[in-house]
Length: 203
Image (tube, rainbow, N blue to C red; front, side):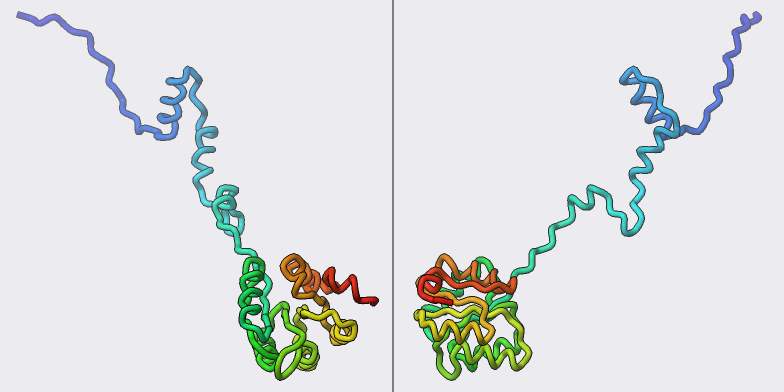
């Protein structure tokens, strides 16, 4: 018995899938939009290509950690231990305190070796006072900004300090409020006299 002839199905030709077009077409069909062209689809691939050297992307800039801000470096000198430690505590929040010494000789050695940005020194100390130490450091080529700290507002001491190249003179009773501003002023090359000195110093 002869079987009825069946219609031959057209041969199915399998073409290699284009992953970019297929993925884009699936997304376009789901949203009801037309399929994007290859050129438009390639834009997404281009974003994945690393940027040339020296041209960091905006995202890289946002993820890059901020560089630490450099703090000014100080050397302290005072012959009273309690005062030195109180000064260290006060100034450590704003500056990098390299060392704290107890006399003028140790101050000269430390400043010549460490080359700090600024020096905060008591005026009256053993071996060399703060004014003498400042003069000797200048002779050695150390150009640190110097702030004198003293219990005394003797006009002769203030004049001698300023003539020796000391940029700021702060009374210890004013130090809590004015020592940090005085250091910043000295670092900028400005003269600074604390309130107690300004009230008594005629110059």
